[in-house]
Length: 491
Ligand code: SF4
Image (tube, rainbow, N blue to C red; front, side):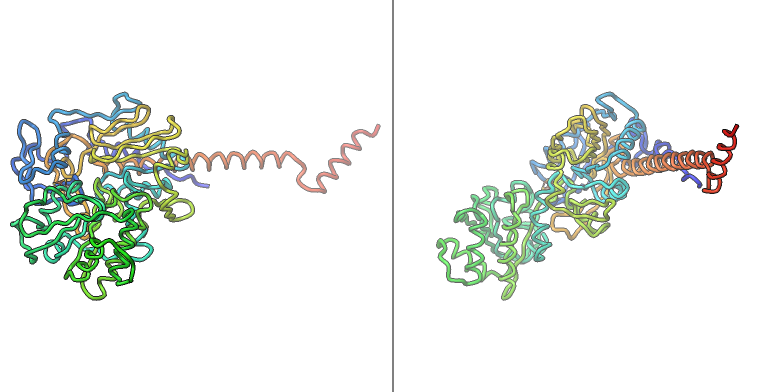
């Protein structure tokens, strides 16, 4: 029997490009820039009409005062140096990859979490998930599932930022102002701004269950209304849905009037944010879906779901087109499995149902890594330089898409994959580079284990064969031996 041949050590192939510990290594990123066009990667709006300049090494945002982008950019301080760590001790990139690969190859149920990366990162992650049978769930996987489960159950009718800008005359914000987490939203859809092409001269913006966004007050071309909830958000939407369907149910006057305005609108848009919805938020999304469904029988209406920052929308869509399944999935020995509830990363870690964690946080703005029930569990973090390193695990600092790494990200409305550029050399490898090296090394280790098992099997078979040869091989041989023994004992 021939033994499989182990491939070359991958990190030797990757050493030149994966020179994260060598800031002088070329990565294709320019070292300086002044007021260059920039697509912001720090929320899923992916604002692409901004500029970045450099002043004293700091990154300076131009064309916006978005607090979210400013906070994110402030982390890229000049002169920051990051090196790979193993158990808190500096290590070479090759050593860190080797240790991580050994843990993943030996793991019986790895978990890939965080998933803060771009399309190329997701494309590099998927083969590693298949090779290791890993479960993949994002840092905000629970929020993602609200809309996903509603979509799986009944489908949905969503719109784009351009459609909102050009057509929406009534915008209803469900449960919170979307301008808080997406500070540039109103400008992107030309609500209350004189600039930008828009086919709608006058709009109404309704805040359901939340105060009017103060950022919109006093702006031209909009009417602002705040309506209180009647019970919770689900109760309110159910009632609104019934009134939109013209069922005879009692409703507070403000809610009944909103139902009439929705019916009269030429293009109504219901905006919701996944991260704001409570547990079982799918029910709220389904209620909103029903309203849109009913309105589309005589006018136009759509949902605008917001969320999917930190690579969530990009990784989810990439996994969906590669495997046919969204996140919270596993490509394991039993084929492809999608478990929207059971494959919750936080629960898996808390219940000790996984024995190795690969956490990806290349934006540095992802939610915190959940605690594991077993503190000795191997943890590998691929993160921005300021991401907390696991005290006993492996930390590999990586570049950020849109800052030190070129790539693509998918916008919140799901219709555009926008390119992001590498603006400066962070002196760090990218997530795809590290993942590709890990995948090759894990494959080599698994082949080596199989080869060792195969050799052990051959040795065991050979030993059994030798023992069999030493024993009487047939009944006749056994009888002859018995007679010979008897003859030898006869005096
Ligand atoms: S709204 Fe989002 S994408 Fe736009 S500048 Fe702010 S953080 Fe960046």
